[in-house]
Length: 147
Image (cartoon, rainbow, N blue to C red):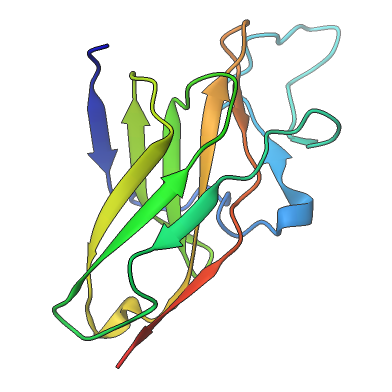
């Protein structure tokens, strides 16, 4: 299956990365395709039953030196393909990947700098049958230490 992959570094965080696992939210990506005057504007809802399962983050190294490269893998188990995968460091979004292909693992080759020490996590978004975007819970955080 052919597809495309787009990687972008965010200009600002949208708040996803600073959510605790228990407080994962479901959004409609800034628009509300089911908006109606009767129900008012859409609002984020707490993820409940049927919430998207958290991905698993793997790091090739948990301790590295400045100038090294550490590979991060975000493993997504979902019934629908992810339309966006986000990598976070210390509760801030550092990288976003959008994809039109069906993949299970999304990777990020991180060049280590002095400021790379921190806790990393990842999450993903899928579109439902109404083209609404739903967010997963964040993965468990992994700590990277710079020596």
